[in-house]
Length: 67
Image (cartoon, rainbow, N blue to C red):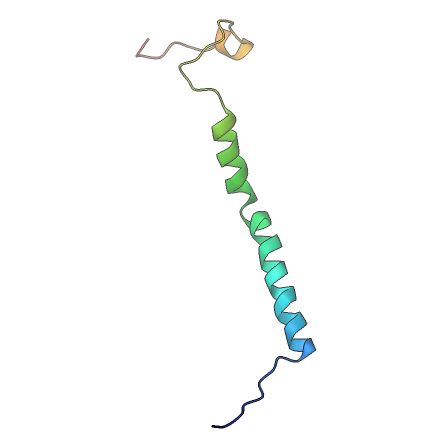
C-alpha cells in the first residue's frame, strides 16, 4: 500500500473559495431582470379583478371589436 500525500495549498484553496462565492453572488445580478419580472407578475392583481374606478388611461381608450 502506497501513501499519497495530496493537499490543496492555501493559495489554490482560497482561489476556489473566492470563485464559489463570486459565482453565488453574481447569479442574482445576472438574472435580475427575469427575477424582477417574475416577482412583478406574482404581485400584480389578476386582470378580472377591478376596483370599480376608471383611471385616466381607461377613460380615453377606444373600444375594441370585442366590446
